[in-house]
Image (cartoon, rainbow, N blue to C red; front, side, top):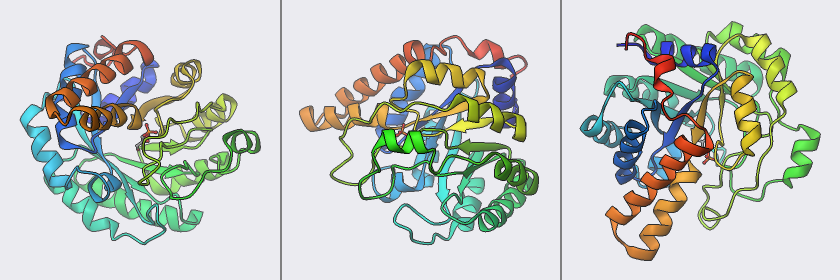
Length: 303
Ligand code: 13P
């Protein structure tokens, strides 16, 4: 069986993207897997700390157990998304035990997010996770730059953010970061923002984000590793498709499938109806928005 590291690297070389779908509610997992299989696509099934702290994913163990029920390694792998060192409320997190647990539970890749720390501290925290995960043969994603949106409080106006490039990943820092940490994939900030998760703003429609492709090119050249686009919901489609040709090998999609689930639950209270809504939206992401249906053939040889 090919490792997730090999699959993401193959995606980068082939100029295709692997979506990672976030699971804030356990019943979302089954329809996401079903849509991926039905579209002959390949995807990661992901859970991030805010999703078991602030939503209903319950725990990394609960997600791993649900994943095992529907697992199909030719199509889906389990990924531990955002384990922050400083969380979205600026609280320090005991991140190493969470990573250790994820490895023991069989997560096939992990992300440490030290992006709210100064560079040297981010490097040190990421390095500690790389040492732990690589010893278990598991790849590590890290983040450099500010992908905003998970924090409480209003974002600066998007146009201002995009025009100023405030928080965008710095190219020389990225070069140093990858060399010194040995991380496998890097999440970059190039105009992408996360959908809001703070109560009261979760239902908001995301602004249509755009991407600075020139910066992405520089980051891809400086790092030489697969780059990751967080905040994958609601980005202008032509920018997403271009980003894939410019080094983005993994895209995280959360809000796009969470909001239909929550809306259907509010309107019907029926989990099966909400699962159907998730299936339809995941199918749209795969088949139309990202156009990755049938993509498995690019990465699957020898799987
Ligand atoms: P969106 O919710 O904006 O799609 O972002 C998801 C994400 O990046 C999770 O890590």
